[in-house]
Length: 81
Image 1: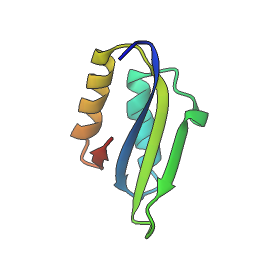
Image 2: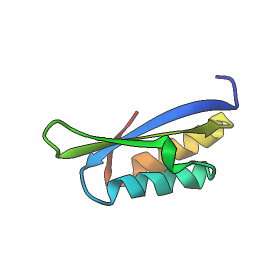
Image 3: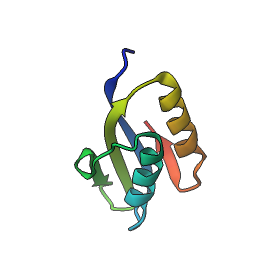
């Protein structure tokens, strides 16, 4: 990987009104320049789950590792891609 680079990260969890906000808050702790326009949400076919993709500028492998660790550790996040 060559840094800095545009990097999309996707988190999947139960579809609730607060899941997109939760993911955005976690990503912003690691990428403070994340813009609202760079967050895209898509519900599952039956509406039970929500996939939230945030695309941000990654500056290092350490930044990505810390973000993955925090997202996967949260009880509301089921998967991170």
